[in-house]
Image (cartoon, rainbow, N blue to C red; front, side):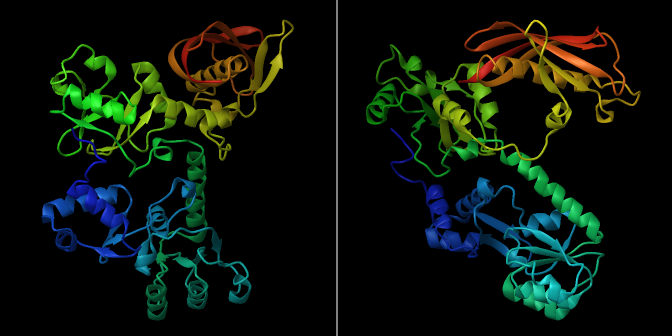
Length: 443
């Protein structure tokens, strides 16, 4: 029987070794091979996986170094390296500090003495060809972004290298780079509220597995040790090749190998898969366990249906930033009609229209979907995912027209909902849809 916790492979030992290195330590294939007594090929593959996991980073003229793994809690913070990429910048100095995050940025459009009141360590000063301002910012622990395509003098570069604080040059003007950075931060704030698999699965946690040549007896022994009845099946390279469950081994002899019983090519997810997507896949496919894999299908961990639903049910992240759906829905209000039914009323804005001045079909679809979800959540708390939608567009609706959306629940069970939605303008039906959705988190 094989399980990953019983004995670490050379590959896993190298990853543990790299994870224990001091931040900033330089790493090479030859050094790892010598230190860990492995072939250079094994060392190279392990370093590449460490790079995929965010443990190391390879930089031009610097080499591969141990870096701080980016945490989801800092998703709204940009690194200096990301800023350089966003503004098409060129790094003039302080390249060893590119992985540092910036807490804020400020524009150096004032005298140096006044500027010092606003500069904090870890901030980014956006400034033109002002050497004294650049030096002052570096001495105060801030990175520097020089606009207008200007270069940096020798003393500035030397100081940046000494302090490991990046100094970046961009050909864009100050307003443009500030707008680009602000947009990038804003986009990340939207992403911050979306829970992903990486938020709940431990990357280096204990994972119980079996191999192709493991037997039903091995499965039984593992069941007695762990209390779990479902396990990923991996090959010699730790790639997921199957899933074995208690249903698969019913009636099988103890000596039977599980390669003939397991489900081959099972559903898997990656670290960046959203929790909503993972939950939907589990509900849709009727599965209880999802292996979490990297880009090469190598096993990182596992998540159960219980893990996913609990994580989604208790996430309390605030709404930060606006998605297109938020913008479209912002001007709609909820009302009750004379019969006591929930309706939504709003006006078609210029942003909702197509080139002909009529409301976009995509916008109408979004409005009907949002209305359906909201009316269902009044009856049944939880999250829903759209299964099917049949839509009929009957009349064009012009800009500045007031519309009324009337959703009506046709059927609602523990795991399923069917909703009819109609949109009216001036008393006339302009479009309607029939939606079916699955409940993926129950209240």
